[in-house]
Amino acid sequence: SDFDMDYAYTLGVTSALLAAGGLSGYMAVVSDLSRPVEEWQAGGVPLTAMLSVPRGSAAESFQPRPVIFPHRVDLDGEAFKAWAKEREACAKQEMYQNPGPIQLSGPSAGRIAKTISSRFSYLHELETMRTHLTAIARRCRPGCDPRTVRIASQSLATLQLILDEFADAGEAIEQVEK
Image 1 (spheres, rainbow, N blue to C red):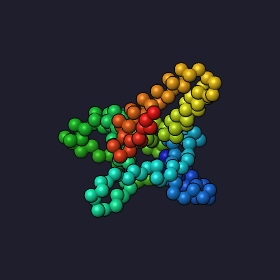
Image 2 (image 1 turned 120 degrees about the vertical axis):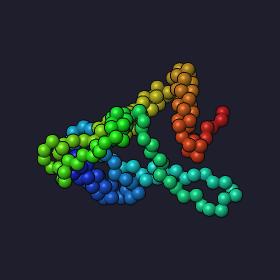
Image 3 (image 1 turned 90 degrees about the vertical axis):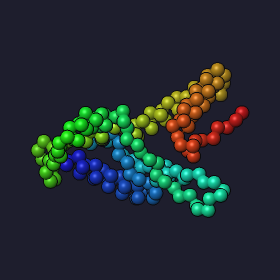
Image 4 (image 1 turned 45 degrees about the vertical axis):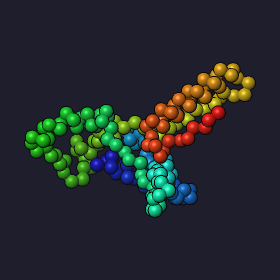
């Protein structure tokens, strides 16, 4: 489809720019895929950011190997909800649809899969998070009200505890005790 070509081209150009910039070990990513191509955001993510090393015990004789974080199906996402509505019909009858070979024109040419169009923008969310953290840092500058620093510190510590609850035991960041 047109989308597949645009996506592949954008990933290829991004990969070439990463390589030309000496950023080996990075994977090209494109965000905001549900928007027009001109509004897509491209970037690179270090491969190591997608890996975790399971903790082993001293009794184990093997060296732990890095693994890619599992990505579970979002059961609350729009794509799964749409599938759940069709699931029973698929079990009872043949629902297979094939739009044909390469779709460069016609009604399927510009179609974007629900799993892509309903996904949030990873790069946009990271930028939003950085903006919030910068605003917090600006407010908590030397000489500000100590209550501001205390509230910000306690709120961030609580957020870290919540994120640790989502993480596997091996991914949790150790909390620094005062």
